Every structure is written in C-alpha cells, then in structure tokens.
Image 1: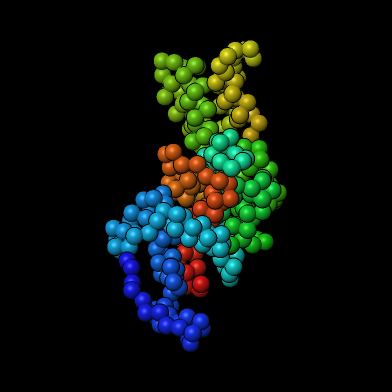
Image 2: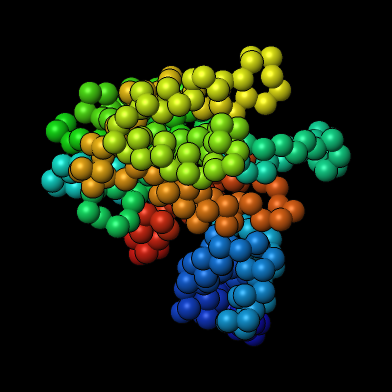
Length: 330
C-alpha cells in the first residue's frame, strides 16, 4: 500500500522533514514493528513466498518474499529460545529426551555464481525436551552444533524446566550411545535412562518374523509382556538359539539379541510404569514434526546452515511460549 507523503526541507539544502513518518513511527521505505512481526510470524510457518501471499491475502499489503526472508531471519537471530527466569521450586521428577532429525542443507559454491558447484547434503538437528511430571507441555532446545553443544543445551533446557540438585531425571530414548553418554554426563546419579519401548518392539517384531513366521504377533506380544515385567532374561533366552550366522546378509534375530544384551540396564519398565512415567519417546518424535520438519523439510527447500539455525530459534521460541515475550520487549 503506497502512501503519498508530504516532504519538507529546512531551508535551501537543509535537512528533510517527514511529518507522516514521524507521526506514524515508521521509516521511509521501512517496515513498522507490527508489520515485521506479521512477516516473521508467517515466515516462521510457511515458505517465504507463501508468507508474502498470506500477507497480501490477510492485510492487503504487497511485500516481496525477500522482505519476508530478511525480517524473519533477522528476528530469528535475536530471539531467545529459553527463558532467563528459573522456576522458584525445583522439580521433584523431570522427564527429558534427546534425539536427532535430518534436514536438507546447501553449501554455496565459489565464484561469481554461487549456484554452480554448490553442495547439497543432510545435517542432523539435535532436539531435546524437558518437562515436569504432571505438566502437559515441555520445553525444547535445538541445535545444529556438535555433540558437546547439544549436551550443554540439554542441561540448560532441563534447568529451565526445573532441574535441581534433588530432582530425579527420567530419560527415554532409542539408546544411541552418544545420547546415553551425554545423559549420564549431564544428570549422573540423579538420572535413570530407559530404552524407548516401541523402538525395542521394532527389533523384536523383525525377529518374530524369523522365529515364528506363522504367528509372529503372538510371539511378539509374549516378549513385550516379559519386558514390561522386567523379565529380560526370558526374552534373551527366546532369541539366543535362533541367532543367524554372523556371515548372513540379514540378521534380525542377532541384531535384537545384541541390542538388548548391550542395554540390559536400560530396561526397567516395571519401575517406570509403577511411577507412571513414560516408557516411549513419543514426545521428542512429536517435537521433530511440529518444531523441525513442518518448516525445515519442505519439498524442494534447502537451507544454509546459519539460516537453518535461525529458523530453529524461531520455532523453538514459539514452542517454549517466548514469542509474545520477545515482541513485547523489543
């Protein structure tokens, strides 16, 4: 929407005065704070082109996709993803999870035309969550950084959620060694780590098709029942005699046996259920979808790494209910 503005000058060759801009609190060819929020709001949810179309549809303003991109990324760099204020009372029990998700990334080529020689690849976003038992929403953290960076962010997220010296930390995940190592380093003796029950069940389902091809579901349900009662030894006995030869191309039974055998200390489902704690990692899987994948895995979209982290900041800040806080303070 164009506005015809009166332009005044103080004397010949003097400073220009723009009464409308001064009264409206905007700059010539600039974007008001309210409009920047609208652009960033749409840009954080859909592609920049679609965001520009939505601004036109809802507000009747014609803006370019590049303008949406510019303001979205600028505010993504400035927004905080975790609140500086810590809970006054430490949590008695904290549920926390960590997992990785791949996003498409582009590295520009060298020379005048950066499109030539560009490299397309996948980068892992490490996403963590933490929430107090009894609460329905979790706090999140996301980074494209190293394992050490992810570990630092994991603890910071847990602290923002209510981690204290006496807090019991309940971790759930797929048992990836780097995740278990960082969980142990971060939460030590006050934490217990549990293998995602449904991830374990996937291993057993693959083994069931080999051991009991006629009734695989019946065999699987029996082993799941044993796991829920902490009868891991019985599950291992059921797997052991059916392990494939190490030279075999497919080894689902051997894989299930070795997976459980190496993680026997992470299978205390009975204790978790008695305390009404989750035995599955559905929270972090849901976080992958609504925080990362809905915006950063659009068909045909590739991100520069710095821009991807900026967009992650916006998505995490929104999930952590810091969106309105940011715009009210700036």
